[in-house]
Every structure is written in C-alpha cells, then in structure tokens.
Length: 486
Image 1 (cartoon, rainbow, N blue to C red):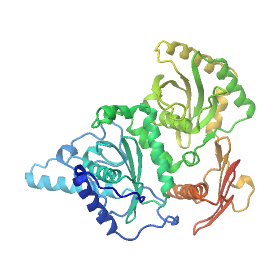
Image 2 (cartoon, helix red, strand yellow; image 1 turned 60 degrees about the vertical axis):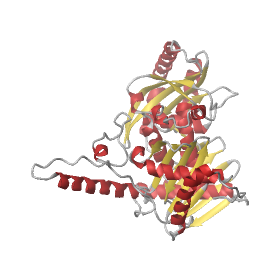
Image 3 (cartoon, one colour; image 1 turned 180 degrees about the vertical axis):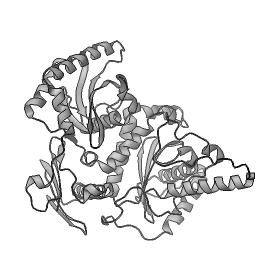
Image 4 (cartoon, rainbow, N blue to C red; image 1 turned 135 degrees about the vertical axis):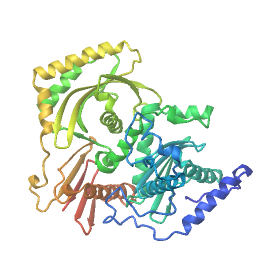
C-alpha cells in the first residue's frame, strides 16, 4: 500500500475496516517473502505449495452436478469435481462423505495454482475467475472488495501486498477491479501490464462505456454481457505467459519475400470498401499484411487483442462472421465492425493454423455484409490466381530458424524487436524445447529485465544477467531491443 494522507473512514465502512484489518494481520503474520531476483525457480505456472492464506471454494452438491462451464461448454483449465456415483450398498452419510473428500481434493488443486486472476465490480459482484467458478468464491471477492474500499475511503490507492509467497496485485479501472494473486518471480510492473491487458480485452468486447452501466446500477452482473467470452480471456492469460509478443507489445510477421508481401498488400488495398478502416491478413499468431489509413495506423495492442479473439473463438472457424468489436487504442468508446473469415488452413507440428482475413469498417448496417463478402471473394481469387495464398500456407508450415543458423557461438535463443513494433525470434532449442516451463522461465527473465530497463532512473543500454541456467545479455535503445541467451 502506498502511504497517503490520514483520513477517518465514514461509519459505513466499519465492517469493511474490520475485514481489511483481519486480512492485514494475516498478511503480516506470514514470512518468507520472495525476492523478485529469484528467476531460477518456479518455471511452471501450474502448481505451488498450498497456502492457508489463499482459501479455496467450498463445493456444494448442487455445484458438483453443475456443468463444466456455463459459457457454451467451454472446458475450464482446472477439472471440476465430478458427481459421485450412487452405490447400492452405501448410506446417505457415506455418499456425503465421499462427496466432501472429492470437494476437498478439488479445493487443494485450486489452491496450488500459481497465478490466479480475479475480476469483480466495485460492488463486489464477481465477474471472472481464471480457475473454477467465480460464484463459488464470492467470499473471496468480498474480502478483496473490502480491502479496496477501505483504502479508497482512506484517500489512498491500493497497489500490491505480499503474503508469504503470494503477491497480490491490484489494477482498478473505474468500477472494474482486477486482482492477480501470483507466486511467480515476475515483478509488480509486469503483472500490472497483464491486468491492464485483461482490461483492454474486456473493453474489446464491451467498449469503455461499460462504466456507465455501473453508474446507473452498481450491482449489475457484467457476466450477462460477457457470456461466452471466458475462453478468450483465459487464452489471453496463457498468451501473456507463453508468447513474447505480449511482453514486447509487438507482433511477429510471417517470414516471406518482400515482393510477395507487397503484392498481398496491393490486392487488399484494391478491394477496399466504403467506410473501411483496416484490412488484416493473419496466419495464427503471425501477421501477414495489414492495410491502414495513413492518418490512423492500428496499434500493436489492438492487433494482439484481435489475434487472440480470432484464434481462441472456435465459432469463428465455422462460418463467416460480422462482429461488433472495440479497438481500445484506436477508440475505446466506440464500436467498429469486423468481417472475419478463415480463408484457408494449414497443418503444422503444433496443430492446425488458420489463415484469417479481417475487414474492419465503421458501419453497423447489416447490408454492408454483402459488400464485404464481395471484397473477400475478390481478395481470395486474386491471391489464388497469383499463388500468394499457397505461399502463405507454405511459410506457415516451414520451420522457424534456429539460433545456430545465426553463427553466434553458444547462442541458445535470440529475440529482436524493432522500433516499428515488430519482432522476430529464433525457435526454442535445447534445453527450452524440452519443456514449456523452461520457455516460460526464459520469457519471464526477459520480462523482468525489460521492466527494470524501462522503470529504472538510469536508462542503461546494456543489461547482463548471469544465472545458474544460462547467461542473458539484453541491449535496449530507442531503435531496437535485443535479447540473447547463451
């Protein structure tokens, strides 16, 4: 908590103050605070020793019989306890005992997760929980809301506190409160960036005008408007842990000849419709080409949100869609309309990758769909006629380049970001190719060094980190960022 001017809370906050003080006493009683320089531990994001301070949900029998996820059958990242089958020779007490054991096992698995994310309103109304069902941990949301309210009533702003190995990080956006509980070796600023990115993903679906809803009705349940988008938010959290694009706020372009990329851009530009803003062609998490107005370039954060939405929403692959979305960095108070169609797909070692065409315009008129559909046909026909779509599919299936191909002795991994918010990286070789936890550990080290570089008063250009696993050298200037691991 940042120190602020002392203020006497109003009588209405007495109960909140009691809850906050009780929680604070528990926080102070826990020792062994993690050092943020400890990067050689906790590479995995799945399990952590259970902490008595991070309470899990109590699971009732009704909850045991509930479906996996109310958002269209989306599978959660943690397995819910299954309903205990009835045995003909058991009593009701024995069945209830087995149900209780099952619920306790589920709670222990919930506690062992290393990074929890919670979203709730200023009235304490649950909106999102990364693991489990937010309705089952409403008490936890209430405690967090009480802490925030107590600090706000004291004319201050809560930012973070540490309880044992867990770091509680808060990011408040009007009536929407975002909390991350993590025991990973990531600095506070990196976790704040992730929470802000989650806020941008919600604005992507609802626009920044969602605050007006809570001004009229503080207890509004935002889940009614966000129904079916849980998997998009969970996908964003996974990407922020595993994809360097979200660390750098940059996009990775599909490697291909300049002449081919230019030809694709000309075809997309020639098919431009009335009131069209952007035309984007992407393949998985790779950007192939983007056509934008000269005065209004698209921000890389908006591109990343759009990529995450298209790759994580399975219904978009079934048919052509015309969806209202918001681009927070372009205009966070207005909707634009995205024509989304997967025009091809390629099979890679990591699974199926779709080639997606996105045409964004400002018209809500459904009649615009036919004009955009005609533009799509024109683009696809010309791409096929010149063999460019085949080239894109071949490049998607082609393996990335290795660190050894760069000819630098003992180089294990390289990551380079240009001033144009594009980046390139070598493929993960040994030991990083052996385990995703090793990849995550390396990316978190990059994130830590980058955070220190941009938050330090002394803006050094060269950073050196010598750990027990590898040596990392990072160079950061106004024109580029270079990360190398040896």
